[in-house]
Length: 130
Image (cartoon, rainbow, N blue to C red):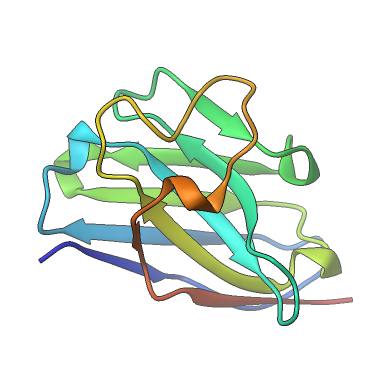
């Protein structure tokens, strides 16, 4: 069974940092891209960024560029989202996702679409207080 488990969320003051983890199981992790999304109530799920299976492509959406860093450790079947200089507008539930299709779902300079991804983690809440 394909599973993605996002964790590491919490309450942090503006300007602070958090690192989210996405632990994967049930599939060959290093064959597929991983994406991060976030969502606030009443709004559509918004892309944060993605990392290709071999780290050859790491893409960030404009609102997080320069503050967030995506990485993966294929030996641990885990992807990470390091979030620095957090702002109140970063408050959201954060999700990791995978398309489970080779060479798909993470391209250079290409904004993310949630429809590309078939498998999602359960989400972890990030709250940034100002």
